Length: 376
Image (cartoon, rainbow, N blue to C red; front, top):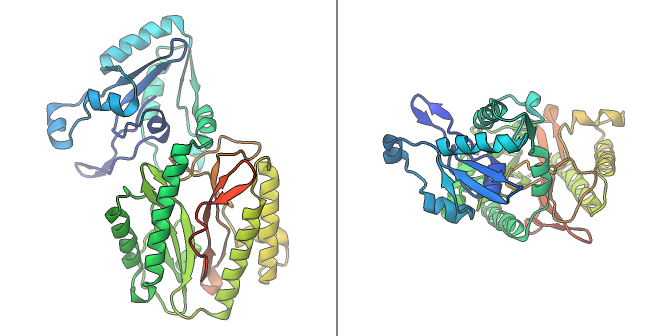
């Protein structure tokens, strides 16, 4: 399996590196272009170091073999040439090899994928008779969080909650969305976070009706709402929390929409427990959102509810901010997922979303972000 490669930012500069989550999960290595080879039949593992020029080492540094072994727990580091020789030999006795295949949702993406996994996949196709995708198996493994992972997520959530509280108390002092974003960035870095776990959404007024709004540069208007969808990243695990606040005195309609979303959030969270099928969860949460929209006189036909609630009710949370749960039939203890109902009414300039991070337990669930009030 391959780590990600660096990607271009501008001219001769690279973007800030973002590791492939499955590779990090298996190795803990947060550097570009490394590989890991696992021979399951012999229980042997190798890290493969990239070829790095002397110039690259001077300007960008270089992960030493000793530190790579300490981080990963793998006690053998080899070169690319040695790895290719090893793979040729392994192919003589193994007809099947597993690596990351094409992302199942790639047809929906509006961005280019990192080329490193595909490059390795093509190299393996030249050596092995059968190259199989192990993405789903890894997703199932990653879907059940270990105690160390839950601790890391809780740590990121605790910091995010603290910063939300700081900023809510100062909302009247901000003039532009970017000032709010800067406050989150400052507090996150000051407290040891790697930064944001995803692009922050700071959306005032009608901007909140654009689901992935991240320009964060508009002037804040009195008597409007501000939607804050913020993720801190600590120890390589993120939080994912959304709150919607009134910038000044809210209108009666804003209060009603916010209260309806908050009530739907509470109802949907109460559904969560081990054994709940994904299909039943989807149907029940959709019904709650339909009733919520009907209560606000936004629908005449319940089937039209996606007009005002166009996104999923939530997603898995883990190394990836949108962590795959491995296509489960039902919820299982150890899964962490978000619950994020929202109502978006562009014609009224109102967008409200409230999002919490939920751990499925042996007997039910725990709202990991419950310490942060959902008050408007």
